[in-house]
Length: 339
Image (cartoon, rainbow, N blue to C red; front, side, top):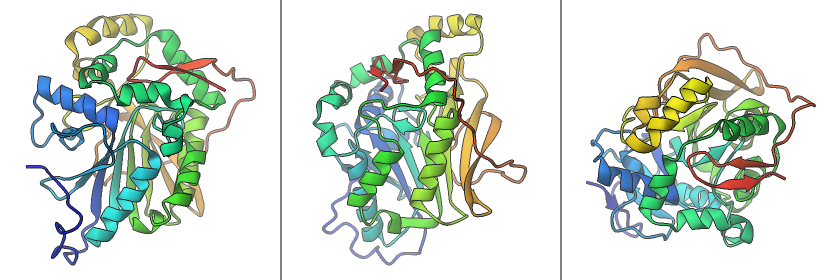
């Protein structure tokens, strides 16, 4: 059974437990609503990787919301990056444990995730579309997740992964830097062997994704045991993917037509899953670099990956890449302008 944490008294007597690393599952509020409705249609098994991301039945739009799971991991449902970092540090302090695994589940783009940096940005006009989704009904978040994706939408995201740009209401490297200025205890709460899994579409794609991931590593840690993980593909994470996040992408016109014809009808990620690519970022020989692991079935939420044959490096930007005028936020029906 999952239950709410009452910070005043719940942890009295357990702060001095063994120094097991703390596992935090972080879910953007709209994603939590998606999983809540998905669970009502197809009940998740207890050991489904996405069970910790189900927003509790009695929860409303108020965040942050902290829940302890049966395995003593923590779920934080959040609206802004700043509140996520502050609350994670508070949980770590109360527990007397460093954060060993941080999983963040949200919609994403190359080099950023779709949620506001802080309360001020949340209340600004640039976040009106995010607010509409975050404050919307569970079924609305569920329905837009299964909307077909066009070839044009996919190619514009690939262009964006090469060109970069500013997209409203996203948290990229700049927003992480600013949020950490307010969440002053966050870095101290991370273990020296921290593993960060960004459970979000295409965050690690292209030079933009590489720059974000290596920059985030340098921002958060100076330990060569830390790893940051993201995907180069679109992510799959509904009831049918109990192992973790799966992968999907445009391969051929025929494949895209087939997948779009069944996806919105059957609403089952597993029917369209593919082999995917993971970007793993780490401090290697004094520099933050990335490697890409190909042919993966899932991005699992545990610690260990075999990096013995990894080839580390950085991706270069092309001077000739055209910046798209707008991009669709994967997993939503939202289009945002690119500045």
